[in-house]
Amino acid sequence: MRAFANNPNYDIVICVGPQHIEIAKVVINQVKRFFQAQQIYVITSPSHFEKFQSLSLTTLVLVNENELFDRFNFRSITTFLKQKIDNGDRAGWYFQQFLKMEISKIIQSDYYLIWDADTIPLKPIHFFDQDNRVLIQKSEENHQPYFETLEHILGLKKTVNYSFISEHFMVQTKLMQNMLLEISKKAGDQSWPYYILENIATKDIALSGFSEYETYGNFLNSTHPEHFRLRTSPSELLNTTRNGSMILDTLPHTKDLKFLEVLGLHYATFEIWQDINPKKIKVNKRRIALFFFLEKIPLIRSLNKLIAKNFKKTYSLPQPPY
Image (cartoon, rainbow, N blue to C red; front, side, top):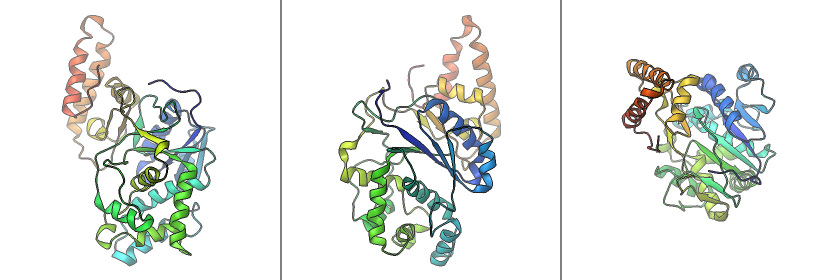
């Protein structure tokens, strides 16, 4: 897919919890390598700042997660959840979503790309078409509590027959600000995250009762549907996997990432909760080493097609031409 020289400038936002520190450093380096962002905002605890400062990137902006809001932080959301459902385990999950929305108030670019901290890009990706419309990678997720909350906080129903949930989302900064303004008007004197939390059904809040992607995506479609379109052509569609940890463990090496790129993937997600089999991962690493060894021997290089085909079949990877 070709780039368009006059596409809008954008920043990148990555929200990082303690469990994702090491992989986030890999993600940031790959983001810097492949994407054309102005600034890379990392929202995290100040106790982790030094680990990211070691990357020595002039475009890196570190944001204290506990100072982005005036009246809201991780501790306060934990307290809220414990008071409401006697369980604060999902505090971090909700908190990171709210942070990625609130940061729109300090972003300087017209757009910002929300990017998951455990998702590693493997090649350049373009996020706008020639008409400067945001390209969206749809999914088939359909979690009803998200839309019940959406209707409560914005009076909107689900407006599309697909999901906006992916491992990334290119957000129009001003539109996110407008959406937060709408929510804040309804919240009154209350901080808008509390208003959202109070409008999640009690039966859902202990699990997954809100999605920033579905909320913003449906607001976008309801107010400015002309500002985006779905990825549809083969040159626009992204080949991805969420099974990176099952294939290569939770922290891949450079050669591992190169192999995933060869398989035709645009990015891979390495989730820490996946069921990891060390024996299978060891076998996979040996196959990858064999793959790159065979690459040096033209007469038997064709065997690599079998190795790649086996990986794609085993892990249900997309099947772009190898």
